[in-house]
Length: 366
Picture (cartoon, rainbow, N blue to C red):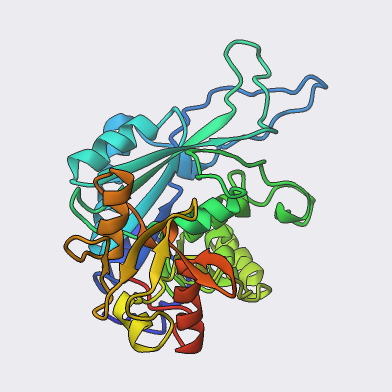
């Protein structure tokens, strides 16, 4: 279902429970929620220099008790669930005060938790009273609508962002600082719980495709919208505080979309399949031509139908590779070599040349 232009890429000022009722169902590809933590703070905390620490002490974080907080949680999660497409996922962030209640409620409502991500803060605020361990992390729960739901996970993109290594469930990201931290006219923090853009960058790039719609029912000063616009996604932001909503609008207006292989998910596109018979048909391989293994030993010959034979029954290159290696399965494109200009070259090189010369550099996403 398409979304009314009045909602798309817009910061809507209002209560999320009321606003979500007016949005069309199944309109979001991703939900990121940073709800009240119900921190239940009492008294004041002071730094070692005597200055008062300004944590979260706002009215929106106060509830009458766990029953009231749980009822609120079920209400906003129910609203989000209605707006999620079947393949959409939901990210919710919290701390020790609320994350376990959130997880239990999510499971009770039928959501399937895919991962819990630890946001480790290298520059976390100390425990000034010296009464407990320093609270140096927050937790994100990443959930699908159900156990069997198909969802987006951009594995290769996240691996690239992690220096070529599989992305892990612990993210070391500093708190907002410097120019990223929004300030009011007196130089104080505009929002007490502003999340770093790097955190939303990971969330959005991991679990959306270009042009996808990201819903944030607790929009704050617009980090989700800023990163969505930067990476070429759409957003729907809901924020009940007028000052925060206006700050978010101004912030996002200054952001321009940047296209790159990472933002455009080029790494996730599937290359078109190239059958062996196409290489034979188009002259890249000849009927009866020998294929060699990595050690340079003649392994099999190519047949006219694009199969290969070692003297027995013809088989696909993958079945033949598995037979030669004594495995249940193997990749023939990786194992076999062909002789070209007196040297052995990977069979996969011929496949790449076929794609380049037949306009098949990149295929559509699955």
